[in-house]
Image 1 (cartoon, rainbow, N blue to C red):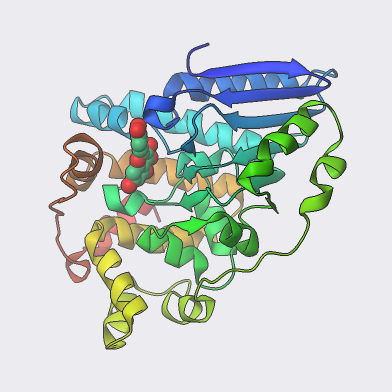
Image 2 (spheres, protein in one colour):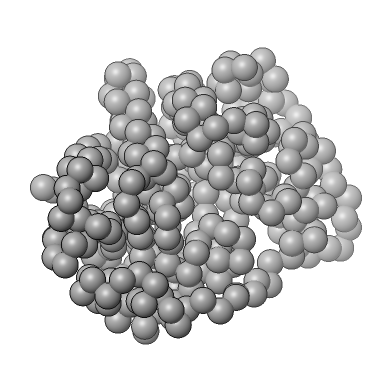
Length: 334
Ligand code: QUE
């Protein structure tokens, strides 16, 4: 196998993400290999628990193989794009339905696709190094991997805030919000992982780490400025109306830096996702991914963030109030 390694012992199967140069971004081979291994282990009586870890000290998983998708989009290879996202979302659904405890250890960045292979699982153990976000609006895409299911189910406003601004949160925040289940100091993580590998039993391995965690996130502001179902133009107007509020200024700046079409599509997908099953969300996301990857904003956003890295994308249209609702409806498919 290419970028994932596996090891089995004491009834525990471990998948090690091992593509450190790309921060473990999931390419087609990693998605396919992981899917095959999980199916095998699901039926294997010798495996009781699945552990997913990273060989990179910096990242659990930075996302998907967005550069390759852009290459395929520019070459007109829509079949490759469909194969990629159908495979990735199929893997996310399998993690959600997995018949055995599935535990992700997140000691670095977990963004986009990295959340897809962790959040839907039974346990997500995070440290102070965890950096969690759905940053896709910044590359002309939208929060996918089943996030249109889990974001609307977070505390009021948080899903819209994370999805529309790409805000990054830390490990303790993720536990407080329910995105993660356990907080373990990074210095203790190897010990916890080793006790899981030794077949110590999960309850024992995690017994010390059940204390409630607190968050400094401005949850009241998030709830009031980012309500589910709100029009992003109105959200931006609300933030700009809060004159002199530093947090609102920062959020307005973030919102305006992203692809306006992506922001509008994200708001619509999260609103629809609140009423849908995970499978329905993933199906809607697949349609939206096929549509949005052939728009100019996707090629331009990936260029600016991951190819040329000038971080200065030129969006079409350039502002939220110019976004055509018919274009959003076509991408979302409703
Ligand atoms: C949005 C994304 C991704 C991103 C940045 C965004 C993404 C992704 C990567 C990434 C980062 C570092 C790498 C790499 C990929 O960045 O999905 O290969 O070395 O994979 O703003 O969705």
